[in-house]
Image (tube, rainbow, N blue to C red):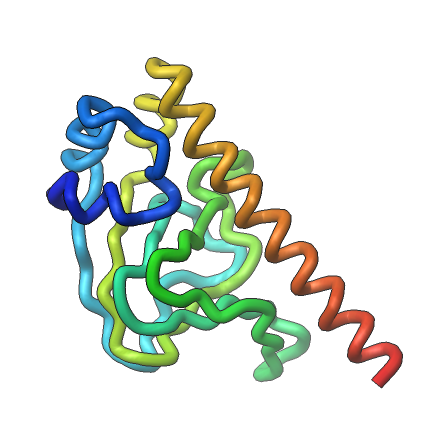
Length: 150
């Protein structure tokens, strides 16, 4: 369980009422990940949504065997692992800790059920996740342009 005060400071939950925040606290926990640890891998089942409290997390794609491209580095307050909220619930990238990190994890299935039952919660969270996805697409596009045009 994560205190509502902690969730209130995170952009993903900005716009939720006090009652809604209190309900989300029961779906979330804080987990410590050491530097270098893989949080999840591309194509794995996406069971959790993540929001970084402290540290840095590299979001990366596998280009070829043993070759990866970092498309984003998450910093404090940023959400990642949005695949837990979007079918087919498979991660589209991998996440690796660049530094020791403290991360809020939210059970994706429970959050999807809650969002379905409370349309306001669903709208707020999905709108924030759409912004995350848009940013990742923009960053990936810029990297592709840079790779092609040097």
